[in-house]
Length: 146
Length: 334
Image 1 (cartoon, rainbow over the protein chains, first blue to last red):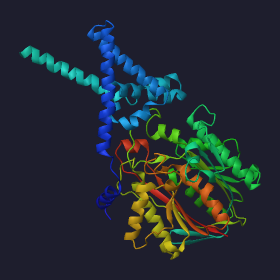
Image 2 (cartoon, rainbow over the protein chains, first blue to last red):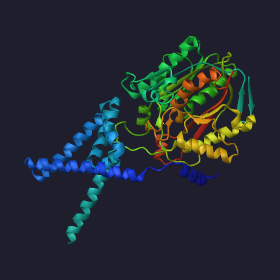
Image 3 (tube, chains in turn yellow, red):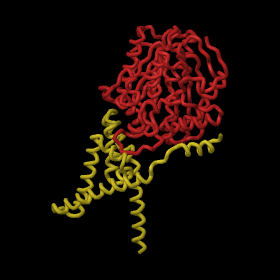
Image 4 (cartoon, each protein chain N blue to C red):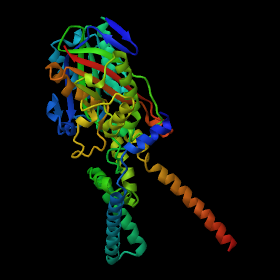
């Protein structure tokens, strides 16, 4: 049996993720998080915060709640069902920073928490910053031309 | 006395005279939970890190096995130990105070069988009078080494397996007892190009096939000649593939075939996807469930074959395929 033939056999025996159910759950849980964010925005706005300040406060609140849930060991239980629905909102990013910070505490504050806090979220920051620089340059060139 | 036939080695004079298995809470809640010597409901085992917890788990199993054997620690002349952690730290930390010559092993989930192969050969060759074989794993220390931090909100694929929190220890001696190590077949590394570290069962099944077919050829026996053929931890996917491959070889596996990774958890109830894995899986099922049954004669003729996926986090990140191995130990009621 060649590796290619074996690969075909493996595919036939390996169950696939339940795409339909997973997408529905991601939509519902992700949607709930976003709707909750919207409720917070309205609350902060009605309390007198300007729109820009209110949206910053929403992000801060969601990050705070995500970190608390991670610390209590509840976030991964939600994320198991939420998938991309919990990964894509800012809550996913907060969890990706908080979980290694908690996990690697046993290796000390510097080489543990400090060095490993960004093992998962690091690439998001690196490529996020690179992308914003790239778009900034494109915008700058565009404005020079037009 | 050891005789070689093909790849297999027949041993005259290797017996298991004591054994113990200690597991975590989830394993204790599984279908064979009441078979283990001890269940640790606190998965930290009162320690400050998961690695220390894993070592403590093994230490408890070693202490139990030694006390059951009625052989003082100082009379053991070799210990074969291994686990999943970098530099086999889990087992070396557990045995460092024992003062026994130590052979550290790395065979991933095949470690228990690898240790039994070596201890059996040493006993058969008259090299050791009393040897210990140990293997253990801990879900939390394995997760942080091979995957993600525990609190990270990721999703597991349906083919992924759950690392067993458990330790198994067996004492091997040339002095006759009820459990005989009759034959061993050391595994060869087999790699059929599987790169998905979340489908280890599929990576390991061809290694299991290779060893099993070699053993049947060497001994001129067939699957039906055994009370039980049990693989280490191929899980649901790997064991189905092995059945398929054995069918193609003309040596179909019947109802007497099962897998430690399928026995230790209830897959419907315990959310472990394709089943259990880790060094502690085969080790704890062997020492908790199988050996008592071989000792009392419920099982007379058993093929215990633990399988190992020998990748590392580095090799997986570099896209390399998974080299796999399967060591077979033929155990009989004597």
